[in-house]
Length: 561
Image 1 (cartoon, rainbow, N blue to C red):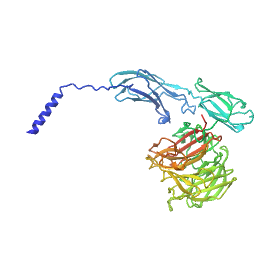
Image 2: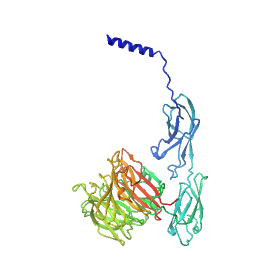
Image 3: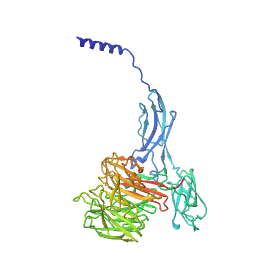
Image 4: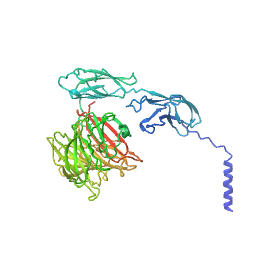
């Protein structure tokens, strides 16, 4: 009986409540509603390319025409005219806003009208169209005078190019790198100019309107007290399709080196290409003369550059097999055999090679080695000392107290040519960055992996002194689905700060944004490279991943400003 009364009362209350009209919910504030509009190619090779998304921001609720600027050429480093007659268009909207009719594939050479309905019910008509825009970039990005052996140091803020020279200079032609499709006047590649006086060079953008005038002068620009100038970081180029961009078909083992104006990339076999180190534009293929660095279907060889612009190449060799080392002095030449050595390390070698110094004088060459079978846990590498240009006998070095590895995913590089000095090591499973004391070959400092790096493969390391300060870089490519792809650079001035993790170490100077990808294809091989310009004013950081088809280049400098 009590339950019946309760149910009846509840029903009565609902009945009474139902007599009132519901209140309309209107947000207290209403934004623009439409925030941005993005267009990308609806078909073709770049339809899913992250670099091929062109976005226009909507800055006012009264904005009626939304014009999406799209480059005249795409990619911008080509002469491929852009076709915008079939572009997939999307929009960023505030909550509870919608567009009619729905967006989709549009011919952006035409005007298309839509209606925006905002959260408060108000409506706004707007038009979407496209604009094929010629580039307004007008930078002088690189400058050198090859016949005089001089490179220019460019200060973009001051629009000045400093030629570091003290004596009288003979008239000479210059080479340069401009923003894509820009022109320069006068053209120093055509006319030999007198560089003993200030020379004005005007760079005109492809749009024919935007200009920037540089003054080239004999000068020695000041450097920062030590190390990198804060705020100097600049991305040079990035690609997630380098294999297609450069026409590379190999998949075994991607490694890199720098020779003069070029970044050299090898896929671990006979395929070696070179690109402009500042732009990533392919310049040619190295004539390997029939040399193949691979060993079977899974054993790719490697390349590395020394500090003087020479390249060292090595084959991949199993235990007991002859291992060959080659050198290359110019990308237009053919590698020459330097050393044949029977691999007595007890394991496979050749997935990574590093060089410190000048192989025509004094240098240290390190090569990784490993074994899948017993002994599975490995902690040794092979070192070759070069003295006065003479290569010594390869010797096996074992590291004490380090994180061991059970595969070829390990990299070792010396900071100087002193074998008693510091060197750095990174390897799979350890997934950290290790500082090794060369005098005792013992680990003395360690930076551990980050919070989300447990499924990753940080097995690529590179180091050097830049403007009096030591730096070391580490890179982990996407070895597995959802493993981290990111590069970091650390200041190795103080061993006491060389602690913590990739996320919080006090020594960390730079870190790229991590990516966690799926559906990987290719090979898990990766590489990282730190190098500097011959004049010592610029530091370059490159990293490459075979599984992702990803390459990135960053520039830093030490120009006092």
